[in-house]
Amino acid sequence: MIDKILEQLNPWWSAQPIDNGILRTKYLDILNENRTNKEVIFLLGSRRVGKTTIMKQWVGELITKYGVQPKQILYVLLDHPELDNYSISQIIETARTLAGEVKYVLLDEIQYRSGWDQELKALYETQKMKFVISGSAITVLSKQKSYLTGRYLKYIVHSLNFTEFQQFSAKKTIQDYLTIGGYPEYVLRNNPQYLLDLIDHIVYKDIVEVYGIRHPKAIADLLLILARSVGHKISLSKISRTLQISIDTVKEYIQHLEEVYLIHEVPKFSRSLNEQLYNEKKYYFYDTGLCSVLNAEQQMGALAENAVANYLKKQQRTFFYYYANKRECDFVIEQFGGVAEKTYTPIESKFDPEGNSIEWDDKRLSGFYEAIDKLHPEHASIITSKQHGEKKYGHTSLDMISLEVFLSAQ
Image (cartoon, rainbow, N blue to C red; front, side):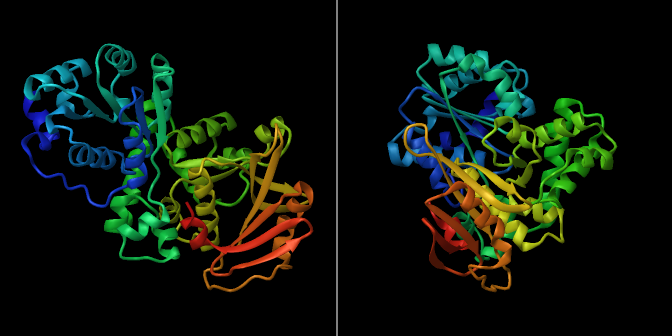
């Protein structure tokens, strides 16, 4: 039985063509760059974000670009029910019997395999193989990867960025991207039920079942509240009263939603770490399509702000929201300048779906200028729908840039 399953999972062994659609070159470049080193590669991210497709696209590259023999590449879907009773070592040994030497091992959905980290450590130290593994739930991985400390490299696979979206979709505008989002299959199918089913699957399979959640409806309702609150500070005590669960339970549920890559938090800017930890936070969805389908009345401006937050997250920036004197700036990027010197870049999202322009002295920019006056940055940006421009404000260089151009920057 296992022989047939492995042959089905690895059609390239029998010279069948690999058709994996549009290439996700950013992630293929990462895999190619790490092809010859020893470290295990972790690909983490939400369900159906494209991790499996990227793995199979890399199989094609290994064969066509680097001349690897097809039977030297083993792909294993670890949540396949027929493989439950076989260890990773047994699966690899079976593959060797069928195909000969195995040089590349791609293990998909590793979180379903208990004890995988110890087994992988032993294989890592005794076998000359390159391991790439994927997983959807970060907590399951973080609890088990201690055996691999210093032996792995971790990369987050995100949904399609705006440039990739335009390659996948017949719809090309920035507003299309904000409402549809970047889950590859949904971009191609554009059936809202797909995303609703995905959310349901993530919540119940990756959270409720894994953690034994006693109030599954509460965590689903929490997700709806967060979708309606994008761009706003969140009061955990208010959510606690609304859902009739404790604040600690609200915190636990939010943590789980972060762990499965549905949402990410943005803390308030403060030079005090305690204030950062305990002040109200904002929460954004990793994919604007998810946010849009959960809240049909979602304003385009909120989705645009969410897209800016996601861009900064993908760029691995450290960023906050700014709030002082009842004035708010959407984002402040923090980075190191000289020796231990921090510099800041304020960013304000002012996307107008009608394409209306905004003046430099618009009252809605008061929080933006408040942040500039407080932080003395060299540069600050206003993200618009179409508008571009430059101006000096004291010693700070200001620019207006359209959301489309901003999201297209590498």
